[in-house]
View 1 (cartoon, one colour):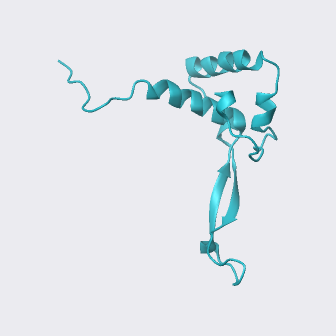
View 2: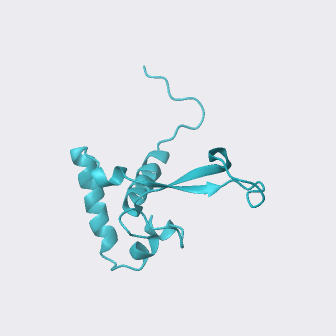
View 3: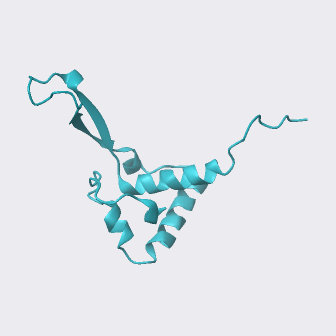
Length: 107
């Protein structure tokens, strides 16, 4: 999952970027795997995984030539990179179980 992260994105509230994980020591994915399995086994998501900050981005319609209002912006949430990796791991795991067509009928 770490190798699939996009380069050049903004740092999260913790100051870490995808490049920090990509170019770190090769043991890091093993440590993160242990951490993520521990999170799943004790059923507790760390409090810091829930924090993000919102960056206002102007919508692409003539924002240089007129005064801006709140409706002229859209917000982008910047989340911590470790929580994104955890989310991508969960999505990958559960997408393998996705039903194709009708779900099976329980007997």
